[in-house]
Amino acid sequence: MPIEIKELIVKGTVDGEKKGENIDVVKLIEDKLAKMPKLKCGIDKVSLIDECVQEVLEEIRKQLDY
Image (tube, rainbow, N blue to C red; front, side, top):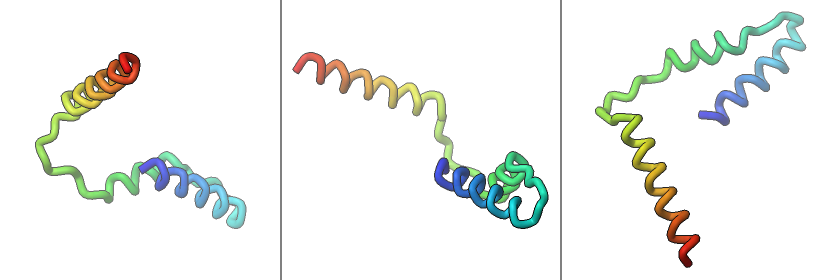
């Protein structure tokens, strides 16, 4: 996702210079995101993030104890 946004910003800048008009990058990104299919799974993002944080902390503790 970050790569796609970066590409949109670069494309908007390059195209904007050729056409002599300003492109609203935020609107462009929102339009692209609106066209993308929504996730239909029942993943709880907060619990997923918490789980990932706990795993990373556990790995850091293991590395420190090594």
